[in-house]
Every structure is written in C-alpha cells, then in structure tokens.
Amino acid sequence: MYNLYNLEAGSLIEPVLNNFKKSLHAEKISKGSSRSYLSDVRFFLNWFVAFLRQNKIVENDHLSSVSLLSRVTPKLLETFKNHQVNTNIPQKTINRRYSSLRKFGSFCQSQNWFACTEGSRSANPFDILKNISDHQPFPE
Image 1: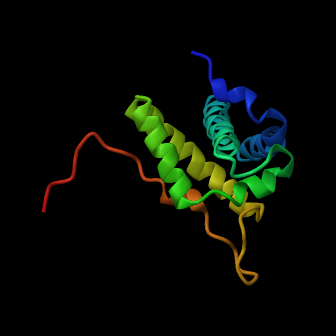
Image 2: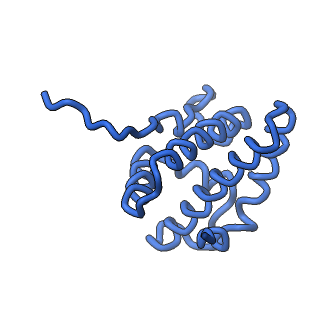
C-alpha cells in the first residue's frame, strides 16, 4: 500500500531524515532497523505537515524543519494516535512507530531542535508516547 503522506513534505523533512540516518549509522544500528526507523519517522512527519496545512495552522512558506519540530505537542501526538486507531492501523505497527518516534525524539533532543527554556535542555515530546495495548484497563 502506498503512503499518501510521502508527497506532502518531502523537501522539508529530507534534511532532518538525512541527519537522523547519519546518526543511526554512527550508532551502528542495523540496516533493517534503520530502514524501519526512517520509514516510521517519515510517515509521522509527512502526516504532521499535511495535518498542519489542512488545518491551516501554518502556511507552506512559513515552515522550516526545526520550526516544524517545535510544534510537536502532547495534543498533536494524541491526534496522531487517534488518526492511526481510527484508520485501523494494526497495534504492532502503531507501537513500532512510537518506538521509532521516541528514538527520533532523542536524536532531535541531542541536536537541540526542541524549544529550550532558560538555557536548559528541552524535553523530548515523544517520550510521552506509550505503547498501546489490546487490554482495556480495569474499571475502578
């Protein structure tokens, strides 16, 4: 199945993905794992750019790679989760994407690409992503 989001933000996200790819190579991550990380992060970033444009949150010419990443919020990540669940993405795929995004977030944090407060190191917004489960919590 073709990922329709691949056309949305190619030139905007490719520099970020290339840097992430170099980082994975430097960490000696296997080719298969690197390919999965890059595919999952590419899917998210393309979805994200499409979401921002469709909701008129940003104009096409006012986006840069780093300013894009500064817009990642818990609310946005919840919207992404809902999108995946509502489009019947398998649980294993969602959890793999979350793992990839946490890895990507660590990389972005190491590059200081997230907004910093008062000179301190910024938090990784992707750290809030927790794997989903088939099991519903017990009612109180």
